[in-house]
Length: 396
Ligand code: HEC
Image (cartoon, rainbow, N blue to C red; front, side, top):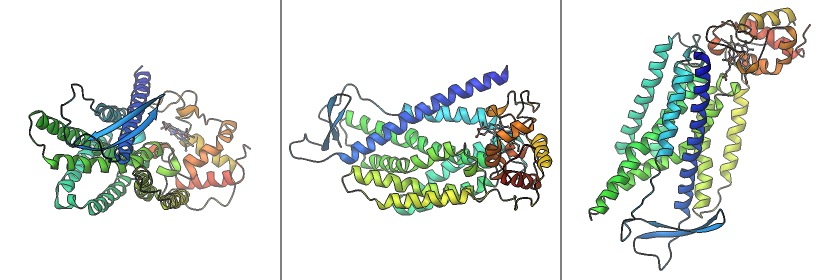
């Protein structure tokens, strides 16, 4: 019963998380585009930075941006904040359901570091908070006034954290952890800086006072960070479903590359929307980066040496039966696993043969399976499987 409830709560929370994320990223991309496309022209009301015309859904929109208060504050003002808050709340709930409650399979890899589930969850959560505090301190320090320097330090900080996480958690756990960490920083930017500063500005305007321009500058700085972090976060969140990316030797380097490519791609769109031309070189950089990612993902897990030089079908089957089939069978015998995960059944030679491609991706070219290597599959067994795969995965 509990397992059915966990499954359903995971599905519903994931649904909410993805939808909220779409709404958040969608509105933030929209406003960045709008902001950049506003053009000043004569005849606009006082305090207006520029205007833009848009067409959507059968009607025309005339958008105008006031830098200072309009002559009269509107009675109704739409705020954009719940998209971000809901994304974080649902994301954190999902983190608890999948990674903290299921730490043994998803967060921990005892061959990386022998943690208990509560310790792993506590370390993961504490590092979210700590990293955010460090980021906050960096932004507020003297460095915060130098955009490029701050970006470089922030980049090194995130790569160092990623490297650290891959030495504490499983590959998959590390990816989700760094993704959740960046996501947390982004939502904290909205919750603690952007929205409060906007509230202060509105309050000052209503009171007939001049708002402090520093509020706007600070909010702008954080919006820019969020803009550049969006693509890497989405990559990290989906990459934890791709074993070649998260469960191979250079997983942390892959994250480092993606953390660089994401902002470069955003730069293309920012520049284009601002009417400053299309820096096509960015796509060259992104493509080169992705080729590097693909190449690195082929490096396999660290511990697997060359494949066995002799084909031994029986030994290959035995490796699967001994290390995989306790979960991957019609009625799993592993505690907490109640149905064959992802419908993958590995209990006889035919079923094993049928899943040869998935076995290759999950257990030979990566060490995503067994999760956290809970059944202690050896490097030698993986080498035997490699030889079996190279021979065309015969069933007898
Ligand atoms: C402790 C239980 C357990 C063991 C042992 C185990 N798996 Fe899995 N397996 C899982 C779970 C849980 C998932 C689902 C992961 C997810 O939600 O992404 C899974 C998913 C898979 C998938 C599907 C991946 C996909 O892309 O859909 C394959 C293939 C797989 N395992 C192969 C193996 C192989 C091969 C072994 C042995 C080397 C193995 N598993 C050992 C629990 C296990």
